[in-house]
Length: 156
Length: 457
Image 1 (spheres, chains in turn orange, blue):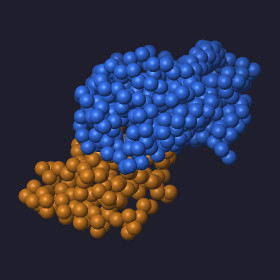
Image 2: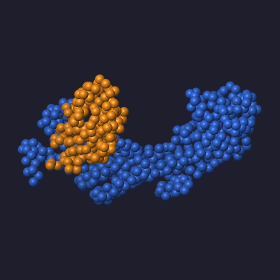
Image 3: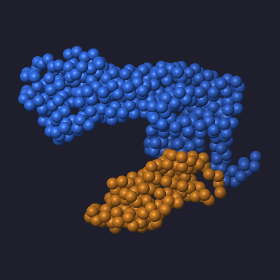
């Protein structure tokens, strides 16, 4: 495998030394481009109290192309589908090579705090979100309590 | 061990300069003032339980009404707010019902009321009929000189009530002493700051000379100094610089971090690398400045504790509740914190700035040195390699501002001024990046095979 670019080394160092509050990202020992990520559900959101696991992969041409990020923990959110794929502009068309792992994870955390049902990925969730927001939020809370718990969902 | 004793021992053993020890808050002197004040109050029948009840009553009263300043039966005033901020005339004010001699609006248990009645009688309240003008007697003869002490006070005159004012002599002494010592500490701080500023300035000049890249002899030591300063900045010795922690460090933490920094420097053999007599001297001076700052932090902390302890004792003994009402004029000068801030700022501008750090000149994309630097039309600068890759990928927008400036960049965009600067200050890094760029250009032209061939060389 090709040597790890300086950029990835630097980002990893900083993530370890100066972690973002409520976010952790730890690279695999055998593949330093693959990260185990956890994000705390933002306070005053239906995801509050939950700990969400994600996987993040840096493709070969990173940072010219965005990292690939996916939720591993089941989550009820209009912009995240059943497979954990995330609909977020900065992960796609609005990616910029000056963005970083930490900024992307912050954007994802912010997305949890501000769901956007007008640009849905999970259509059924988005529809409920628009038609019966109370119901949607309560389901999101239920799922958080059920799937995003700290015990069954350990930080690794 | 009693705190006062601990305090004395710390002051003696920390190796503070004699001048500092003289300026330290004299806990025992203030303690004596409290003793005298307690005696004074007791002579008036105002022992702590009684005062406590009175003040509690006032507090309850304040809590139950919005019109704070009126109808208070009793007040403790630290300073009349007219004179200069360093004068204190602490006094107790009672609003006494002319008819009954009782306190206005106050409902107390029998014991307290009795004591107040006594006080009223002793102070001659019941003899005087008119509230504006009166010539009250001394509460009782005391050892302190008191003349015309009891006068009707001007604040909030209320019909039907007389205001009795009792000045507290020992209390005045307490706060005057404390204020004097605090301003002494403040003066000490600014003297120290000026002295250290001088040191820092001198050292800054020395560092500038030692690292001047135009002098050939400095070529080797430049990298060593850069590494020392980088480690220094990364250790965040005096202040946190992360998203999680912006706070100032306490002395213990800062000392620990400073030791970490020293260990790292020793481990990396950087002490030898700065070489020559002059370099070692400068490094010693740098360490000395930091040690002085740590000592300042410790001194500030112990004084702040002394101040907080003495106010606590004051309240315990007198129940006057100064700790919560103590005016800002005698708040503790942020001795060490301010000193640390000022000195760190000086260290940054006068010393560290002489040696540019790589991080300030790295490309936001590859995070390596911006070599060769290309300045886009939008004003953002990247290394040429990253921009070539972007152009090949048809990524047109500036990574920082998203303006469509990448596509039009050409050799006119080379930033020659920055290039010269980088060549001067980062000769090794420039060489390495140049080599890498050439290698990658070869890969672009001939494919990945080129890389393997090249690495054989």
